[in-house]
Amino acid sequence: MPHPFELEFELALPADPEQVWEAIATGPGIDSWFMGRNEVDPRVGGAASMETGGHRETSTVTAYEPGKRFATRTEPDGDGRFMAFEYLVEGRDGGSTVLRVVHSGMLGDDWADEYDALRRGWPFHLHTLREYLAHFAGRTGVPVFAVQPTAGLPADRVRAALTAALALPADPPTGTRVRADLAGLPPLDGELVWSDEERFAVRTADGLYSFLHPAGVVVLFHHLFAEPGPEAPETAWQHWLSALVAPAS
Image 1 (cartoon, rainbow, N blue to C red):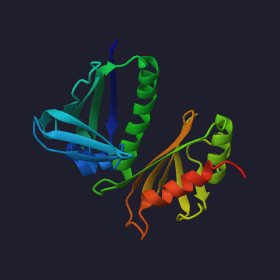
Image 2: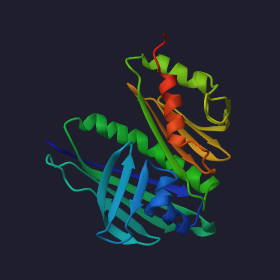
Image 3: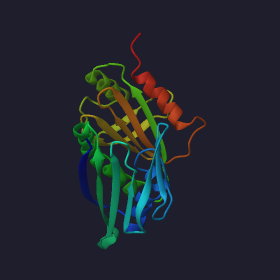
């Protein structure tokens, strides 16, 4: 039986309404802070799509008021599950903006775990949006996604491997300076801007790097603002991630 849910968040952003609108209602803007590769047909009834790790999800634009309101909704599946997103944009004095986000819909039999994951994930994504607008506004990020099962490794060992690779202490506070040499990748030189029990985020001069390690898997969601090198960024990061959790020989 599907279970209805609704989550609502409000945050002040250091950008004007036009910049916020570009970030939440265009494909390149969403690419620069959220998940996957995105496309938006800018009209009511148009299609909005997100592709992450080869999985493509399509929704329909249900509201499109430039600079004010953007909303999408997926079609219900056979069990009645669907997702709806609404973004409300309000300009404030001094060139800042308040954004209200409402995520609602129907969840399936594992609704409690799904709801908890959504409830914990949204503050992180909205923090990434703020980081993007504060430090990379007007630039388009290249999204990088990589995922690797941890092959039964205990969660503490996975976290230890990740913190060691990033040259971080076990429980690093935000504001920690990050200087890490990553095999097969350019050095990571920046600041830890998010740290909790299952994710880290690092901001450098050319990107926002997110490392998520829930039970059983490690996931990377990066947004790169520099020119890509000769190797596709996702390929290089997937190789690094696979080596990170490879069983010891």
